Picture 1 (cartoon, rainbow, N blue to C red):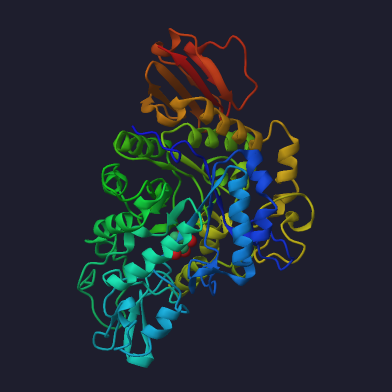
Picture 2: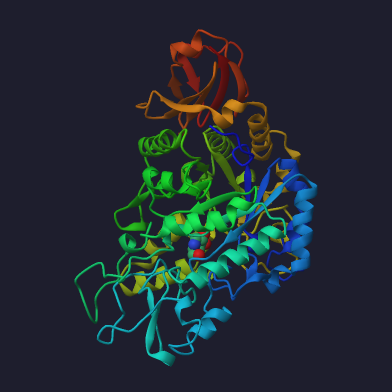
Length: 562
Ligand code: NOJ
C-alpha cells in the first residue's frame, strides 16, 4: 500500500462554536482556537479539521453557509483565519476545512436570486419543482423531520432541502454550480489549506425525476427516507472524479467525505486508490450499532459482536484498496465514552480502552475535541436547554405523534447531538474556562473534575495516554500499515486482533466491559517475546499470556517479530 502523510496522521476535529471563546460573547472563535494551538501541539496531533467557520445564519451551526469565502462574524475575520493557518503550519500541523456543498443557506446570494423568478439566471442553482395537486412534489422526508420540500410563494414552487428548510440543496446537475464550487475550493487551497472534509458528499446526485418512495399521495401522506433516490446517486462518481481532476489532483492534500448509508463496497468506489475521487470516507455503520429499525431515535443497546463484525468487515474490505477513517464520535454523535464505555465507575479505564481501539486499527484516527480528556454526555433538565435543530424538530414531531416527553428526552440523552457540543472543558474555573460570558450551550456540570488543566497535571490521565498512542503510531509503521485479523472472534467480552507487517506482529487485546475477563493469547504470539507497548493498567510483571486475566476495560498492545 502506498505511503501517504495523511495515512500516518492523527486528525483533531474542532467544533469552533464550542472550543474556546476569546471575547466573552459565549461563542467559541478563531482567536480562541489560536490561543490553544500549543495545547494541540502538546497532544501531538498532525492535522486539524475545522468545522464550518464561514458566514452563516446558524440555523444548523454553520452547516448552512451564506458566503463560502468569508468568516462568520461571531468567529472573527479572514485575518484571524490567516493567523490560525500560519500558527498551525508554524507548529508543523496542517489544516483541513469543512466543505458543505450539498446545500447552502437560503440566505446565500445565489438562493436570494434563485427564488426571485423562474427565469432568473440562478434559478437552476437549486432544485425547484411545482407542487403535485397542491402538495409537495414527492414524499421525501428531511433528515431534520417533516417534508424535504418547502413551498415558496414568490414563484409558486417548492425547493428541495434534505436538511433544514434553511438549507436548500444545490443542483449539481448544473455545470455552473459545479464550476462555482471548484473555483471556491481552489480559492481556499491557494490560501494554503491542506484538504477538505466534505459534508454529506454522497448525497449530491439525485435520481432524475425525483420519484416518490411510496404510492401514497396527497394530504396526510407520510414523509419517508428517500435514500434510494439520493444516496450514492447516479452521477456522484462522475462529479467527484471531475472535482478531483479540476481541483484536488493539483495539490498534495487530504480529503475525507462524509458518506451516509455506505457499505464497504460503496466506499471502495469513493476511496479506491485508482479511482481518482477521495482519500477516505466517514461511514455510519458503527454509529448505527445501537439503533433499532425506527432509526437513530429508536435506541437499543449495542452488542460487542456487532461492533467486531462491522470493524472487521471495513478493515478487511478496504485493505490494500483504500483507506479507513477511524472515529467513534464527532459533533453529530454522543460522546463515545458514555456510549461505548462507562463514564462513571470506569471513566479513565474505558476512555483509554476505546482510544486504544481507535489508534491501533488500519486507517486514520480522528479525535473529536474533548475526547482526549474523556468528556461525557450531558443531561439537561428541559428541552429548552437544547439548541440543536435536529433535537428540537424531532421533539416537536414526536410530541405531536403522541410520544411521552420522558421517552423523548431519554433518547435525547442517549443520542442527541448537543451531547457532543457542550463547551470544551479547559479548567475548573466558572464555565469550564471556556468563556468569561454566558456560553451559547450550557457546560457539562462535571467540568470541575473533567478538564484540561487536571488532565495535563496528571501523568496517568486519558490525555497523556492519547499522547502516547499518537507517539506509538510514529514509532511503529505496523500500527499504520499492518493488515488486520480478528482473534477469538466469538469471545463475548474481549475484542482482540492482530496486525501484521512483514515479520512484525501487533497484538491488541481489549476488554470491552466492566467485569474482569480471561483471554488466551494465541500460540503464535506466545512462541516469541512480545513487548508490551501500552496498557491502561499498571503493567504487571510475569503475566502468563497463556491465560491472561484482564481487569475491567483493560487494554493491552503487544508487539513481536516472527
Ligand atoms: C453533516 C454535518 O456533520 C451535520 O452537522 C449537519 O447538520 C449535516 N451534515 C447537514 O449539513
